Structures are given as structure tokens and as C-alpha cells.
Amino acid sequence: MMCKGYFIDEGVHLKVGYLYQKIILNKDGELCDFQYIEMNQVVEKITNIQSSEIIGKKESEVKLFNDYQKNLIEKLKEVSSYCGQVQYQQEIKGDLYDINVYFINMSYFITIIKGKDHNSCIKNLENPCCMLRKILDTIPIRIFWKDLNLNYLGCNKKFAEDAGLSSPNEIIGKNDYELGWKNFAQTYRCDDREVLNTEQPKINFEEKVIGKDGEIMWVKTTKIPIYDNHNKLYGVMGTFEDITERKVIEEKMKYLSFHDHLTGLYNRRFLEEEINGLDKEINLPISIIMIDINGLKLMNDAFGHKSGDLLIQKVAEGIKQSCRKEDIIARVGGDEFIVLLPKTNAKEVEKVITSIHLGLQKKKINGINISIASGTETKTNNHQSINDLLKKAETYMYKKKTEKKTQIRNEAIISILELLFIKFSHEKSHADQVSKISADIGAAIGLEQQEINELKMLGRLHDIGKIAIDEKIVNRSLRYNNQDFTKEEILEYKRHPEVSYIILSSSNEYTIFSEDVLHHHERYDGKGYPRGLKGKEIPIKSRILALADTVDKMTSTVNNNFPLTQEEVILKLKQESGKKFDPELVKVFIEEVLN
Image 1 (tube, rainbow, N blue to C red):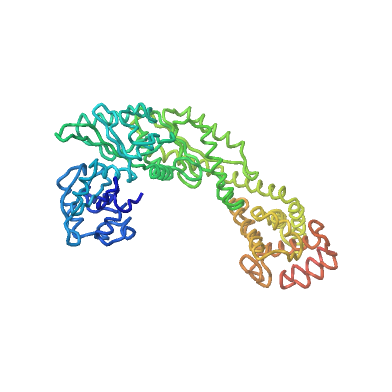
Image 2: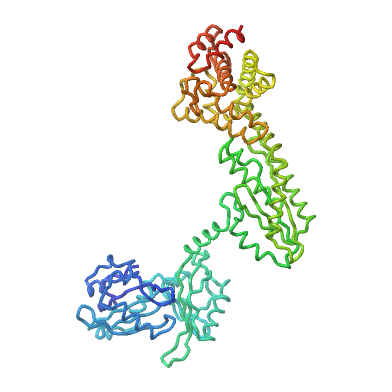
């Protein structure tokens, strides 16, 4: 709250300037500067500077008046821990002023600037502390003071509001057990008693308190001993500021720094810090599980990264369901996890990994079984290096992954093809017809039986990449010469040969089909996609596929209101001969296959 004008009491105008400032320390913990938080109109008149020009800025930036920063820092050398009060005189614009600095805590202080006639004004006040009371009630920091029995002697308005009181006077004589934070009373009073017993301040410690509505707040607290005029211990004064918002941000940042955002599991950074603390004799035997997801790249390529993310999340859930609360589970890479199991022997860890495998076998994503590779190791004595055991577990894992790699990928490709035929029923009949027509053309040009068999398989596989294409686009794609696509839809549809290539290339068994599938939309005149190959640059089987694919679209009744007659097909093929299709293949198809 900004203090505006003069402080007013019983009609007396006090020409007293007020500044509320934040301490800035250097790397050695020494005060080197301060920031302006509030300033009243008296200071504006004294300095001829508007508050809007300095609020939020440092003294080193604005230089409010001559040598203010230098003089104040020199005077501060006379006090310790930035507690209590500092007084000195300062010349401002040719006039001499009394400067009184009151430290609220290690972070904030108040500067009172008194002009020539302030003494006569103060004499008219019934209570000389009235001015300071008004100042304390304007600042955003909570302040209280207690006697030697830890009963409250007073507080400012902010503190009273937190206590659910309508006035600071209502707190006088009460103790912490009578206020809203009674459950924390013992903790607070132990801190107070420590300050009284040692007569040493407790500076800037963080703690939880209860707010006026019963909500938990985080505060930064300072407590200092206070003395009477005879320098006899009188009680304790405390100040605290609400740092809840900062703590929430800190906790969020801490969580993010140690957790994987996708799964909520710990990340590699946390694991590396935690592993040394866990590697103690009391935790022996310590078992390790290394896990790698099979087919994540294929899932990403075939169904998109959302499906890949879902696969990762499902595996993470499966691991958590089979592990205990005390086990540490971390995602340490894109498809890799590590589990540390304290007080777990080799037999017990085998039961855990079996449980994980069985749990994941029951789950599917996009019709594909979830599969993982795993390796385990167990530390049984202090002479074993846990890092060496991690490497061994990783070696076992990759050995198992390699052994089953081909089988798993082949099964995945078969699952994707089956899913394609379920999702788009017309794709099954289209694939069967392209397979038959391709084999007929291959036989007509004299290919070996093995190559004819490959053409049959190519016919079934050539559109497997459509699994990653928008459903509406795929449903319209079977219509011959469809002109209904937007530019964006055309670009989306043209991705499917490349997706098919990626899927088929993932398996040693199917990779022999990947190049031919990739180029089955190239044109003989070089105007096709995805590479713009021309003439004989296009593989022979790709040229055969292109012809068979178009013929089926021309003649199919599926998704096509008006299939072409044989005469119309021949006419269209002749028109496209040498342009879209290999002219030799067109000639063979018309003369030998159709007839």
C-alpha cells in the first residue's frame, strides 16, 4: 500500500518522509544496494522526484540524494545482522535532515526522513509511537512482539488479519495456543524460546503457518530479542513475509527437474543423485531391472507420436503396478527405464520382472501387443560396484532384445496390416486385387516364380503406410481420378509411400519390399512422387504396382459409383502410356493379361 501525503494524527500534519526498501546483498553477504518498494509524497517534495520514477529501481540507478547509499552503508557497519535502528544526519537539497533507519528483518528496512520542524510537530502528539505504528500497518510484512512468557504484546494489521482478528489490540495477552495456528504453536514457541535463551536472532528461516482462512502458507521468518530502556531482555520480536507463491514455483521446478514430464516417473538426473544414497549395506541385496520398449519407433512412424507417447505411458504404468512404493523407477531415455529395488534378492526380482511382462502382454495399442526387453542384476555385497551391475543388466537386456528383434517387428507389421484391413474394409479387397493383377503382369513379362511371389506380397503390403493417414482421405483415395482433395489433403495422402517404406524397413524380413513400395506412385514421365524418378530409374516392380493399382481403381465397384468398362480401361491406359505408365507394361497388360 503506498503511503500518500503526510501522516495525520489529531489534525497535526507531520512533515515526515517515509521510504520502504529491500536489501540487496553482494556475493559476500554484505549490503551493497537497496531497491525502493514504497515512498510517500513528503519524500517526493524533498527530492523533487516522483515515486513512479523510482519504485522498483535500485538506489545505484536513481541516486535519490547525494551520498545516500554511501552514508547508509557506512552507518550499517555499526550494527550486526541488520537488526535494530540506525540514525544519522543527511544533507538534501541544501537542508539538513535526520535519517532514521528501522530494520524489519534481513530483507527489508524503513527509512524515516525528518525535516527541520518535525520535533515541534511530534510534541503535539499524545503518542510518540503513533507514527511508527502507522508505518508498520502499511507495509506488507507481518510483525509481532511477545513478552518473556511468550504472550503477545502487539502486532501490525497484517499479522492481526492472518490471526482472524479485527484489530491488533485484540491479540494483546493471547498466546499461540489461542489462535488459528494452535496446531503449530509448540513449534513457533520453541523458536521464540531459543531466541530468548540465547539472545541471538534467528534470521530468514522458512516455515509453514496457518492463514486466516485455515490455508497453509509458507513464510520467511526472522526473530530477534528485544530489550527495554535499561538494556534488559524484554521479549522477542518476529517478522515474516508470505513466500507461498515462490515456494509453489520452487516445488514445481524441483518436481520438473527430477521427474519425466510424460510418465511422472523419476528421470535420469534423480536416479544418478539417488543411487549413491541407496547404495548402502543396509539396503542389500539391491536388484536392478533395465527395460527397453520394443517397437517404439515403429509405433511413432505408423501411428504418430501421440501413439508412441501412449505406449511409453502404458509401459510406465505396467512397471509401477508391479513394483513397491520404496522401489525407484526412472525413465532414463526415450524407450528405456531403470528400476532399483532395495532389499530384493535375485529370485524376488525375477518375480517382479515376470509380473511386469505378464501385465503388459494383456495390453495393446492400435491393435499391436506391447512388448519389452529386460535385463536384471543383483548386488549382494559391498565389494560389487553398482555401476558395473547396471552395465551388466543393460547388456543382458540388449541381448534379449536382439534375439527377439526380428520376431517382434514381423509380428508388429502383420498386426499393422491386419489393423489397416479392419479399419478400412475396402483396403483388403484392393490389396488382393493389386496382388493378383501384379502377379499376372509379372508372369506375362516372364519373371521368375520367386519374383512373382514377391509381387503378390507387394500387392498386399503396398499401402500399409495408409494406417498413418487421415481416415477421411483414405476413404476417398480409392476413387479413380478423384479431384476432391485440398492441397493439404494431397500432401497428407502423398506421405503414405514413405510411411510404408519406414514400416517395412524396420524388419529384415520385410525390408526387401520397402524400395518397391516406396516408388509405386512414381510416374514414367518423372512427374510422380516421392522422388520424381523417371523411366527405367523406377524399379520394375514399382512400375508393375503402379499399373495394377490404377487398374483396380478404374474397375472396382468399391467406393466407385461408375467403374470403367474394359474398353474404357484400355483407352485410359493408352492415353497414359509413356506418361504415367511404362509403355511396354501397358502393351503387355492389354494384349496378354486382359485377353
